[in-house]
Image (cartoon, rainbow over all chains, first blue to last red; front, top):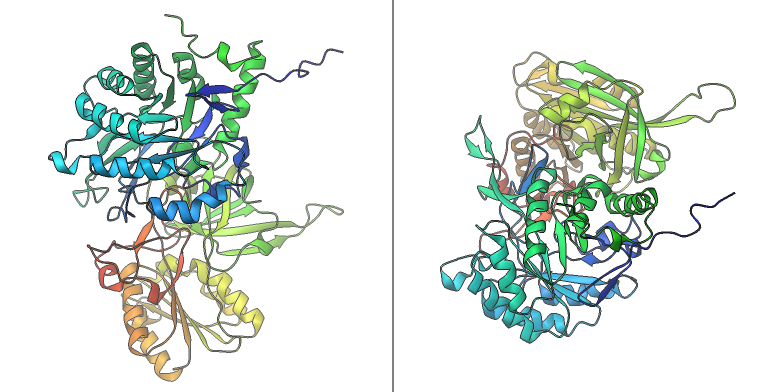
Length: 310
Length: 286
């Protein structure tokens, strides 16, 4: 009798020198600091843990309502509520000492100086393996223009963080731009080791009875399966435009969805909204990837990555 | 058994727009604390994406299907059809499958044994109060339920509470059942009579704010159960926050309804801002 399972396919990938046991990790802001989900899945089985976005000072977030479900998606305007970098280091980081998977700290700033200061602080935290830089924030000192929507501003913040950081630097791009490849190339040149794409797409929903926006912030970030084709397209474009690895994000609900991004050339994927629907969603994605490889007669996930035929 | 697929045992309309659903839930009685909630999502065909939060109405055991099989443990929810998600839920039948996450959140602090307990429910807000009443009565507390609604159609499950041994007082806005007027009028009278009572309330936000006002004047301990739109139910999405005591624009203080609540001690919340917030805020109408 032949044992088809005698050799399990290899799901391991590497991003900017970080070894991941599989290419699946949570998208920032959908998984808390990780600990919140420990009752529902084995955190060690994830490729990595990506934290909620951190800022220099604690951030209380936006007024409510903050979320609204839309067709195959949801809008959110949480307002980057987080405990702040110091409280993170003090109260959240100790938990990571018992975790055997890379910790990627996502962070943001309102000014260049803030970005630099948080990067320096994160650099001193040995439990943090890598950082993911959120550049989808307005630069308060430059009239609120979003760093990530302008190539020179994006490059400036990436270069500054690069200098402050001796760890792998992943830059998360906003899709709310005319041409994402211009920004992707700019951050690559400025020293990014990898790119995550995409962040949420700005959207709006209105309650037709009250005539009010469904979320207090008026507009919010659209996530979920509704944005997946956009995200796959942008991932494909960015993969073509840069040499550094790309992490695909956008509406991944199952392994088949993740495979679209991998085939388009993403080295890894992040799962976001699906975590809200099923806290164990990422486990199903990982198991589904393994099953797919077996079905396809492949033994390594790297045989799938970038295998797009056009 | 915190995240599992299960079978719907029954799903019936018990009053216009109000449905009661029974689900198989092994171990629920030992897990669920009064005031906790579950997140539910039908397994197939759902036009919506996110789970919806529902207060646990009651838990119990069904007789075995035949000799030799174990008793079947179930939980029940009671919900009002208010949107796409609950409409779809209301169309499900016994035998259909659903995904359940929970019990979740912080339930009621039962307080000292033997003291007078007054439960105040507005409409569907009585849902988390049943398990509470049952638990309090089992301990030997004296439990009174004041239940209010707009019309007689919004007054649910009264006889079930009475069967537990709860003294119930019904009031409706239009006087179609019980006393005419707000449930808060009844509360004032009861607190005059039982000034040592503790109050537990769930219902629309304006009702809760009025109850909080009455209780603060009389220095009566009050716990309230809140409802909010939720995505995750486990404290990750931060979508369900409510303003905490001491909240201000310059010093915002938000608490997760799913994790810090859904039951809050009245003193933990910022009531000044609550009255203007949302209309209907009761368990089960997401």
